[in-house]
Image 1 (cartoon, rainbow, N blue to C red):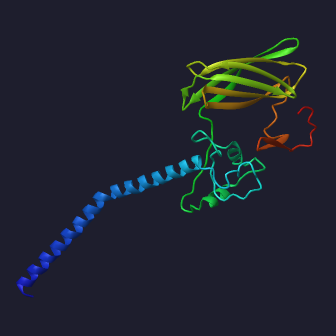
Image 2: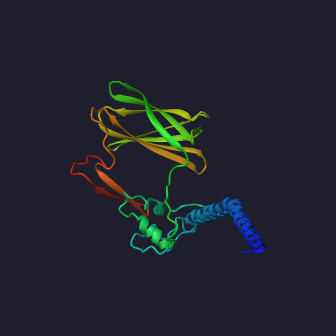
Image 3: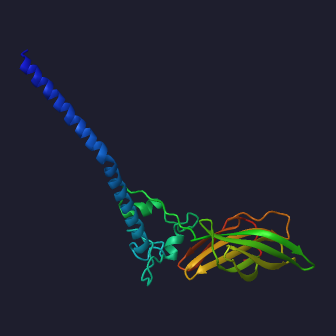
Length: 256
């Protein structure tokens, strides 16, 4: 092979290597940008879906309060709401799998027709409220309970007003208190010794208008037996401001 041909072949090989190296360098340089673009697009799509679920009523708009209507399009917003992001209470409660009128996730997902965008819905209070027994004092006719109440959001204290209700049988007592700027508070109430069994303490906490939370605490009153388990006697299914009660036990319920 002539020397000129060898020089041409060598030069061509070097140029091909340089082009390939340049292409590899360019791809390596723009790959993070492409990944960022894909990630940014996915985040935007996720936010758009979340916003839609919060501001659209779905179809029909009354699907939450009418369990016989077939869901055509899933959405959680309240019909004719005057405030943004106000959810329909029936639509939210029908997401609870313990509700006899429960809407399955598959029904909701299929109605949106977004096969490539799976999602999960978690609904919880804006801040956490916990109750722990601080003391128990017994006298001739009553037992006085004191509970420490803690209100926090992401481990930061929340100052809130408290309204509490204690129920045992057909007996109900209420009390009010508040948590300080440290997020801690104390409630006190008395229950008669003539009653015994599982008592239910329900606490509603309000940090500011429309910023609410709650907790429910079961405890044994005047009894050595542990408090009854959740849904031991009945299952509750709310719909359109009507509460359906389904008994789960053959035990006789003395108070309701």
